[in-house]
Image 1 (cartoon, chains in turn cyan, yellow):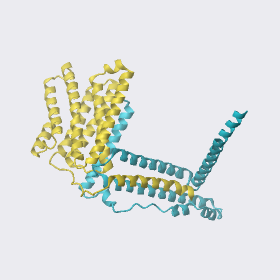
Image 2 (cartoon, helix red, strand yellow):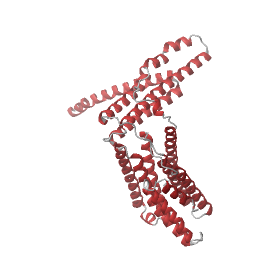
Image 3 (cartoon, chains in turn blue, yellow):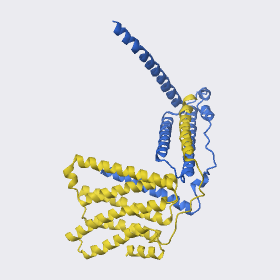
Image 4 (tube, rainbow over the protein chains, first blue to last red):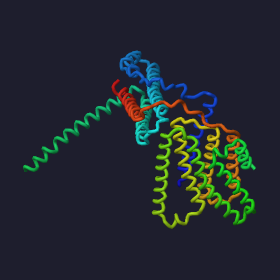
Length: 180
Length: 241
């Protein structure tokens, strides 16, 4: 087996062992991260209005009216920070959701590997989307990200309309060819 | 000396019966040391042969240690035990399939593989199993007692060191280098010290919380749906604003 794969495996094992050890010592000292998030605590989605306000074009227009590059830069930087904090809050809620699930099903005798794998996949997909969003927001900034996503959405709509037109055009073209 | 110390301490703390496979593994390692002492000097062919054959037998018996960790940690969790069995089955099938493909691709080379290669492959399989087991323990946040934790830490460390060193040494052809033997002995001694400290007295895992009655089917469906909603929330928030 490849040395890089083996070193990767060892690193993963070491990291997991370290996690088990840390958790075990926390349990010994009576402190548990789980205790901080009791199962009764509900999962709350961060308000979408906050992000909408964050990305509002009105605020951008207002700041632009001062014609100060430094102020504009500060504004964009702050909005980026806020948008990223909002994204992180959503990730924390997803983590809490997973923790709630794990703490409630760990004793279940009818635990199904298939269902757990499905959940794992859903969580992985969420993390993928989260990572992509975080990357785009930190790279482009939230305001440009919104424009970028809108243009992607517009492009998708155009492509779908084109696809529909092609799909309707094919049978009629075939009929014309058959008549000729 | 260290091994004798661990075994004595385990006997004193009445841990031999609680960890029978691990005790057998340690006893075998101890008898291996005694046998190797009889085969001295280190440079003789008899010693080398004895060393690698006993290492191979130890590697086989080390599966028992993984089983012990599995049995001790997952005993109160029947569902997670089922998950672990499935995961280990998948891992074993994957490793077996890979080996079959390798044998089909290069029959002469594979049949001619040495004891060293075979031992490394066994250790890699053990590592996969241990990785899967520890991943489940971390994912479900299962409590691990001090004794089991010591077995896990010491064995995990030694296994990792052994696999990496076997791979590097086979590639470089340095298997019989004195420094290498010293490093392997050092890693083994460190693992034994960890076991000695962890097995000093009995310390079981924390008692599981009061079991909550839970409709698994419903809980799992709800969580999957909620996770999808969170994902949509994320995507739509930036798009619609």
